[in-house]
Image (cartoon, rainbow, N blue to C red; front, top):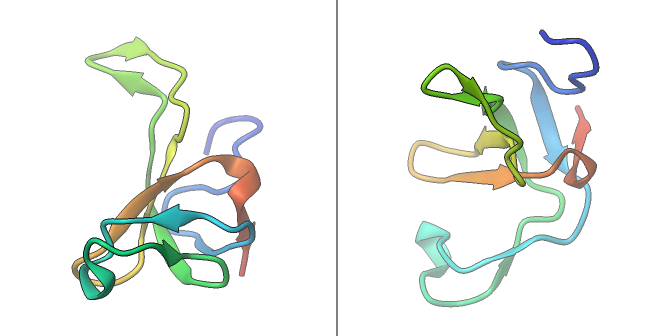
Length: 79
């Protein structure tokens, strides 16, 4: 865990803000709001090929076997 990192890899999180996606497997090509959905942080993107990056949506969250999405820190809360 890096200093200031709120959600380390493996932590359980809930989507706290309204986040609309169009790539959810059960709602293909339609708007789906992820607010209230719970998942696990798979990756926190801080570097690419050994160089530091400032990703806009650094938290990769896995919700089930087939669905993952990227989030900003303020869109998530700990479970």
